[in-house]
Image (cartoon, rainbow, N blue to C red; front, side, top):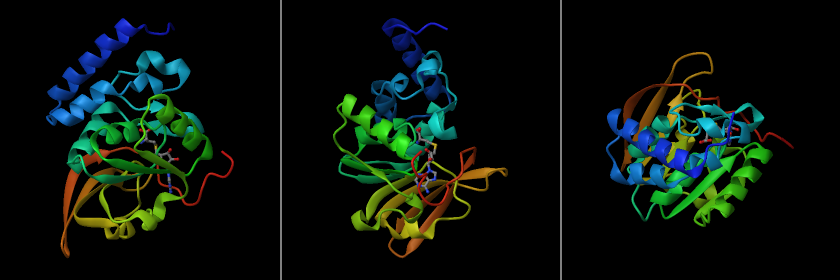
Length: 219
Ligand code: SAH
């Protein structure tokens, strides 16, 4: 397998954007963010050739980088505005974090595996993304000390609706999270907080690695 050159990557990225439009991604800011973040910088060295395929790819620690269309749908659902502070749980490769960082004022991202957290932080530095705070911790309880957030994205599957995260949303805030067990169907679910009310919307079936408790120790 050969390493793709810049010209190849340019063409592949353009055709990915076209494909995303065709599956119904309309938000121009989200498409522009996907167009500017080099996904090849977030996939393992041996998989560079597949960086612009619309599918999830394996990353370190047995985890996955989500398919670009899933990244687009989840990001679009959050309707991020320029002044927003976004919390992401499940940094993984850092690709989704980088997309959020292009749209929001500030992104706080939490990863339980130390190795993934470190690698992602190096990538943010290399790409000059300075509005990201990466944290090595268990994200199950969110990040109370910086709450409330304008938007929260969880990129690992929760067993049930995470009420603790809904509490950390500001009034008017949105939370997107896959809900379901590892083997069963998971539903991508959007919660929108309006005063005391929380509206829930089902965004369809998805497949994510599960949320795990605690931190991944040295790994
Ligand atoms: N958004 C990532 C997807 C990574 S897969 C990307 O684009 O690459 C999901 C990630 O969630 C994994 O890295 C996994 O380690 C992490 N994760 C699972 N449970 C967690 C928890 N309780 N706290 C923080 N991160 C968690």
